[in-house]
Length: 198
Image (cartoon, one colour):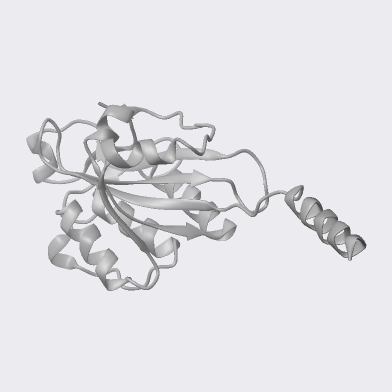
């Protein structure tokens, strides 16, 4: 009997030494009026299944300058990296776990919309921050994505997206100032570099 317990204990210890199965989680966020323009963006947090360094990234898409010009046609846009203070004032709406293929596709999306690597054109009616997160959601595997009347309403769009894909997402619905500290128990390395949002 002692030998059986020793074998089981050795097996459990060997399992504990194996690396944990990890994945990158995408979380979709909205920011409402206040000191800033309404906005939608997403975060990527975790470690790819294939291994490598942990990631803690966030991306949005915005015009380079907020001016009346955005109402009348295309203007220069840019990939947006939110500062912690901006995220504290935003709302985490929902999340889902990505495969490595989905994660790579979302990083490719960021490059495709980046002004230096792809097409940074911002169009209020057809290529804004909501369209950007809609495409990220599609690449993350969500299928019910079309809410034409909500394409200028970040929070309403993300809530509709979560409701329509309820079996695929984890609803968070928490303010950033409350939600972000709960993530800090799992340290990750931040690797964002582009321009920041105040």
